[in-house]
Structures are given as C-alpha cells and as structure tokens.
Length: 277
Length: 277
Image (tube, rainbow over all chains, first blue to last red; front, side, top):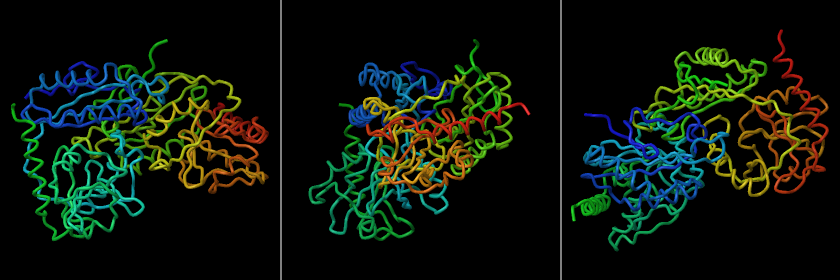
C-alpha cells in the first residue's frame, strides 16, 4: 500500500514528508483548532455539521483562512479523491501559523490528514474514571488536550479506558466524547454547559424517540450512580456504553436497552446518509 | 548573515528547513514543555536554573528524553558553538513525540532554536489589563498559551501591553512574566501559588535587600491598586515597571525607586554571571 497523502496549505504531499516548520504557533504555543470527520464508502458523514463547527472554531479563535470554507471544502474533496480510501477518519487542523514573534496570530496553516478507519464492531462497553477539570475553552475545538494526554497513563493504571471531567459537583464531558445518561426518571439527558457540542450528540438528540423526553441540562456528579444507563458518543465510535465509573458499576454493569436502541437509530441514520441517492 | 541553525533531535539544521512531522503530539494535541534562556557574550545566563526547571517540566509531564539532561546540555553546547551569536534567546522544546494514535505520549522530539536578541534599553514601563483565568497546570512550563495568544488582540484594543491573570479575588501571573508588588507596607511580595516559578523571580527574591522583607504569599486583586509599586519579571526583559492596570495608574504612574533599585541589582548579578572568570 502506498503512503497516504496529506494536504498542507493546498498542496498534496505524502504524509511522511508533510510537516510544519518550528515557528508554527501550534508548536510554539499550542494555538490552533481542528475538526475530525469520518468517511464511509468514500462519503463524508455529517460533513456540513463538521464544516459548520470548524468555521465556528476558527471564528472564535480569530483564525482567518483565505477563501474560508470553500477553500477547505475544495482541499478536502481533492484529498479524498487522491487517497480513494473508502472508510477513513479525516482531520482538518488550522493552526495559528508562522508567527514572527512566536506569540501573535499569523496566517493559519491548514492541514488535512486522512487515515484508514477499520469499521470494527462497536465495543461492548468501557470504563471511566473521573477527574476534577474543565477545559479552558470547552465550547471550542482547540488543540488543547494537555490534561487528556496527561491523564492517559493514570486512566490505564486504574484499569479504565477514558477520563470524565467534572467540576463544582457537575459532570461535563470526556476529552473526546459527549456524555449521555438515561436518568433515574427514564429521561435522556446530556450536560448543557462547558462541553464541546459534538456532531453525534446533536443528531442523537434529534433522533431520540419522544418518550425519552431528551434534554440538555446540568447533570450532577451523583446522578452518574443513580442513572439507569450511561453512554458516550463520538464521531469515531458513535455510541459506547459505560459499564463502570470510578470502579462503581452503572445500572447492572451491562449495556442498557435504551443505549442499544439509540445506537441502532444512529447507525441507521448514518447508513441513510452514505447511501447513494 | 547566514541562517541560524536549529537542533532537532541532535541534528544541526538550518532553521528554515527544521520541522516536525504532522503526527507530533504538539501539533496534534498541544502536548509538550519548553524552557527559554538568554545568552550574553555567548554565555548562558542562569543555565542550571533553566535546566533544573526543564527537568522538572519533563518529569511532571512524563516526557523521557534518552540521556536526559546531559544530552540536552550537549545539544545546547553544540548549537551555541555552531551559531556563535553573542546575545541571544535559546528555546528548548520537548514535545510528546510522534504518537502512533495521536493521543498517547511517545518518544519526545527535542528541539533547540536560537535567535539573536538585541539588548535594548529596558522599557520605561508597560500597561496591563486583567483577565479572570488560571492556567490549567500553572507550575509547569507547558506549551499551553491558548488564552495568552487569544487575549493579545484584546490587550492591544485596550491600549495595553500584556494581560494579568486573576481568579477568585487573587492575582497570579502574566502569561510570560511573574508579578511583584511593593505593597502598602513597603514589603516586596509576589504570588506564591498558581504561578510558574520564574528564574528571574527566584534570583530577585534572593537579591532583595533585607529591609524589603521579601515574601511569597497570596496577593489580593485589590492590592494592585494600593501597592506603592508593581513590576513584572522575565528572562527576556528582566524587570519591567507597571505603570497602569485596567487603565488605573499604579502609584504615581511612573517607575518606582525600589523597582529601579531591584532592576539594577539584578543587572549587576547577571553581569557577574557572564563575566569571564
């Protein structure tokens, strides 16, 4: 298999020769934003949602790309055609650029990378630990995963798979996932504040059957352990049941029936999206 | 003038051809640490302090460099010899490396860059604005300057030069500087918690005359405006008087006599450091 191509400021290059000079503000100061989308059978899933969110991230962080969304969409299209990989993850990164003083936002560098994504069966469920933290700009998809990367060895030491952030008695999100509960009253809830609003989160709220009375609201830490079911969502993994948090089982410690129902509804929606018209 | 050389994982390369591949964890996740030191007449200033702090940053962030401090010291020595620039700033960056999954710490990339530093006369004083924020890992010199870079356009819009962080009624630091006050009782104070402990900060506390009764303690936001003098410190600029904060003058709005005295003591100490033995 030949090396995948990446797109750096509009140029298609083999991934292993694609690079940024040291003066880029991502390397100097961790400054940049990104988005991440999936392709199935060569078709991007929820593309407009991801481009909308990337636009919003760039606007919030004052990153101005010449030609804007049309440029990025064109680069994406050329990359997908050139690589011709059916099932993949595509990351679009927009950095602060080559800053003359290493501190001031410059002309962004725009980087698209693509990697094959095996469409594995969904995991039967994972375990979380909790950590008191809130991302500094939680509603923006910045490059800041300092705490997330730092916590990974601790997560593994404690026999878990990922960390869930909470602060001041309320839970928010995992570093790369949104959190959902079927609460003690049977309602589908997800934290409303201090979270990155995920694309899967949005569609799941839309697809949920009316009897689940889905809502976004503050979710107390203690609700984790009275919830009937807990699951997380992400572009890569769709819906993943949470079996235990901090070593305490959630519900009966098995994937719950509503989680399974929602996973199926979401999968069917994605299949409709990527079906040829 | 020829291009400066950089050192990337031990290799000396022209700066403009020195780069990181896109998979580096600094570009992917903003994960890494650095330190920054000054040379005068080709001699590094407070070198052991900077290497101590870099060691501590790497240890805290689980970044393990083969050969450790000896390797970095050797690379620094080769870089300084090769570039032969008298007065310069040297940045040593240690990133999370080429992570196979873009999320887990790998073998760090170690990058040294050097740039000429004009030894300008110290600025007569600068203006600050304040912002409610605390860095997520304030005692570690990570790459996270997301808020600092984000705030720069706001700082300029408000006619100021830099931002000062505060939270819960206490001030902490500027993004690249420590804060000092001559408080209402004439004592030299600097915030004790939630700050990066700067090398100049350390030496200034040591050099301060006994009658200033120097101490590290919590500093209330309101103390800014009852202080006799306020100044900031950094490796690049040593001691810089603060003339106004949020548009309100500090003291009589001019650099204070104790600030000037401390600046002189520090400058003399640095001159001793870099004098041939």
